[in-house]
Amino acid sequence: AAIKMDELLVSWLGSDTVYENVQQLMETYRAAEAPEDFEKEGDDSSQSSPRGVIPPFYPKGQQTQRARRRMLHPKNATSFPSTALLDDGTWLPMPSNGIQQEGETTCVRDLVESVFAEVGREEEQGQQQQRQRQRYLTVETFGRITKDACRFPSFFNAPLFSRILDLWNTRNDTQNAHVITQEMMEWFWMQEMEPYDAPERFFRLLKQPEHDYIARDDFLPYIKELLNDHPGLEFLSNHAEFQEKYAVTVITRIFYVVNKCHSGRITSRQVRRSDLVQAFHQVDEEEDINKVTRYFSYEHFYVLYCRFWELDGDRDYRITREDLLKYGDHSLSHMIVDRIFDAAPRPFETMTNREFLSYEDFIFFMLSEEDKANEVSVRYWFSCVDVDGDGKLNNMEMRSFYAVQLHRMQCMGHEIVPFEDMLCQMMDMIKPANPEYLVAEDFLQAECAQVSGALFDALFNLNKYLMFEQRDPFVERQKREDEFETDWDRFACIDYNRLAMEEEAREEEAMEIDWVVAGDDDEETDEFNAMGGLSSASEAPF
Image 1 (cartoon, helix red, strand yellow):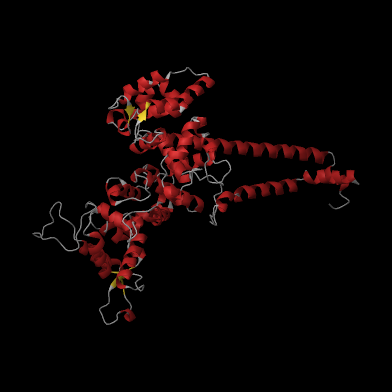
Image 2 (cartoon, helix red, strand yellow):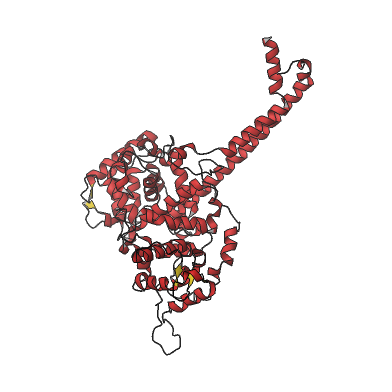
């Protein structure tokens, strides 16, 4: 009986019907595979990426539905002047001789009245309340006010609309206003717009009314609107979990560049001294999101997130010291890894546990590691190697870091470069004000900004230091003449292309394996059927 059952089982497993059912189940599982670890994090998104835990690649050469809608949207068909400065405009017309002169400010009242006349709706009879009926705008028709009168990016429309209503309701101690009238718009302009220039208007809109700084969560409504509005991000609409990660990445990159003191609070002065306002306007006008390399590039997000995911082996969304040692093919020394955890700046220090790196902390680390030619990264690494915290990097501190590098060179069979030779070479390149020690400002001198990072590589990144020692002058010249503005832009482009090629290779390999397995199973089935197959044992049902 046992032998008979084995024969029936083998014949059943070899049948075409069973093979097709198994193949269908496998395809269903692959299509429905979801990142369970993100669900543990509290991500209750109902839609998951078909590629699982890795974000989708950016689609090339496709015009999206959003792009077509943007081209046909009324806010892009405005008749208002588009060459006015960002901070131009007063509510009432300025005194003039009746002829518009070059540089003369725009009368915002005329622009607003024109919009209300063209797209505004009239109140119902019951809403008059013994006064003349007014026209009003809804959030759908408010876009031209946002773009043309207030000079904000178009995706600021919904948050700006909500802010005007909130301020108006707070002023009148009521919650009745749900649409914006011309009276409300005039009051908002006189209170929040006309007394200030473009950076201050931007700052006052993003921050909470009771605060004098922009916090991390203040950016979320605007990045959410960008994800819903921008044609270059339409392909993420079915990947809610990665929309959240993209927003976190953009916000953290903003704080990395703008909030140089790493307080987690962006002030008006920091906004004014940065390119944040220009970057928001650029991403609003540019349909290819990857051309906006400052903060918003999707390819940059993809590189950052995939590197984080490669290191996070246990999928707890945290990087440990052992995980970070694997970065860049184990290029970092254990000594600098310890200092990164103990002393490196964190973006949001009040929420930080120093026993691990969060995704936001990792963004700070990676941006600093791959581009050591800017002020933020220089101060990041200087705080790590300045062990005693006196603001001076002396020979004893550099020697302690380099001793680990010497040991690694010896173990790997590389030619040993004595500490004195390395230090002499670096001092000749940096030319510090005091030969006894280095300060952060020595690395920021204009004439040595591109090579000052070599000292940091010599102290803790063996792979990059060896590449620096063996550098090709022709390759270095090509770098200076290429299209990339920063080392980070260059690295992100190269790494994104590497990840894309690896993904294509995996997909081709998986297709080949599927074809081979399907072919072998077909041959085995044919051989089994030729020997009689199930026909000799089909008298009993399975």
